[in-house]
Image (cartoon, rainbow, N blue to C red; front, top):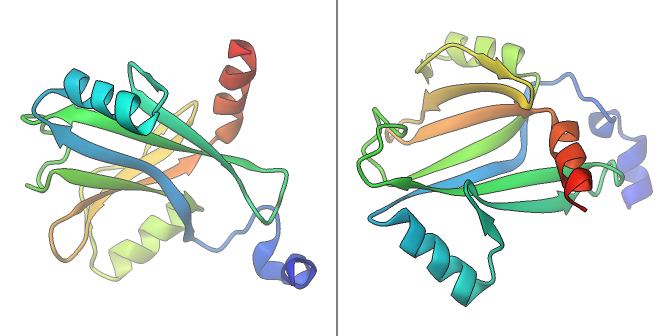
Length: 152
């Protein structure tokens, strides 16, 4: 079955179709970020640092590709989730962010900001119909792979 997927052009290494490819982050608001981070470390085994915890996974297709998911806590009064009033925000990994944003604009989706570019990827924020803020991220995973290799 995987060999059939590999033959399918939809699963080429770099797809040009704008789409979500996975979850890139889970962000929660907390009364006490340090206390809650410690709870997750003590009770669920999270390996945490100043940013939260980073999880690595391998893609099924292509199998050599490593993905990173960031779990982070924000202070309860943080305005990073604004204009949403929700206490959670999901970051989705995407391919072809520029074309995806063009398609979202045509569809009338609320775009909250402009695409911001960093060495670890491009980001933009949108709202879903229930006012959940969503962060879209076109990652440059090699940056994280290099950092992980330096730490070893």
